[in-house]
Length: 325
Image 1 (cartoon, rainbow, N blue to C red):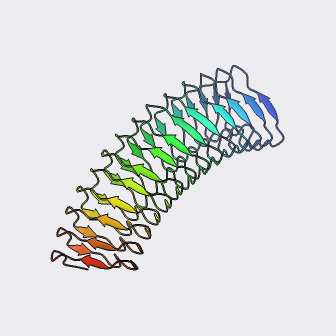
Image 2 (cartoon, rainbow, N blue to C red):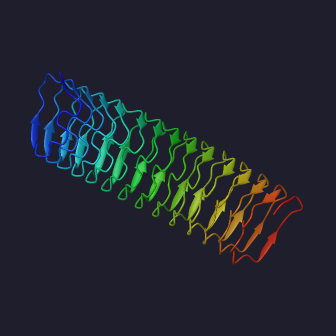
Image 3 (cartoon, rainbow, N blue to C red):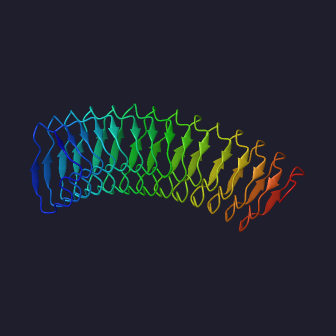
């Protein structure tokens, strides 16, 4: 009734296998590192695929998961570097973390509406993945879910998603457009770090927090609209966004944190609203194109090196309200 844990682990000469209809589960590590296994048929009797069941089966090119399967364990197909296609049926409700991590030949995949969360590292380092459809019903996208997917050009996040985890799209260097829907309330640390092809983005009003270095080194980003619900611009949020020429900070923001706009060498102007009370350390350091800036009366502190190396800055007005520089 089951293929037990580690049953065929490291059987490197195994090229094919037939699983009988009596089997209902494939255990953990069952076919781990069966590097010459090229194909496998999973019968309709199977309801679960265990953790790392087919991990590092580098010869596996395709697989069909039957409608009987409800769960796929963590890292089940991780490192299946020749796996180019896979069909996930609507019976599947749970896909564990890192299931398709480093499946470098996988070019496209559909996630059925039965799946409610995209787990950590799910598609990390899938370097051939160009597009993906996330169905309505998914409520969260985990850390590094699409990290290092360097061929991914676009993705649509459904309105059901409420949170985007840390480093979700980090180093997706071909990602040129993305729509963040109303309903998302948080964007994690480094979420879009090093997305060098991303040119513009709108952060909806539902977003109240952006993690540290969320858009770090998005060197193609020319404009951004910040949510009216944001209370602070976090540490390094737009660090090294060298093409960003202007930005409007909404009246909801009370603090600009450390290195928020550091190395934004194309930034020529910025308006700081009267709601801001503090400007952090190195907040605008090396913004060499910034010519002038007015600091409102609401600001009481300006951190060290906040405007260091702003070589184009010709004038600045510091109000009486500032008690520490």
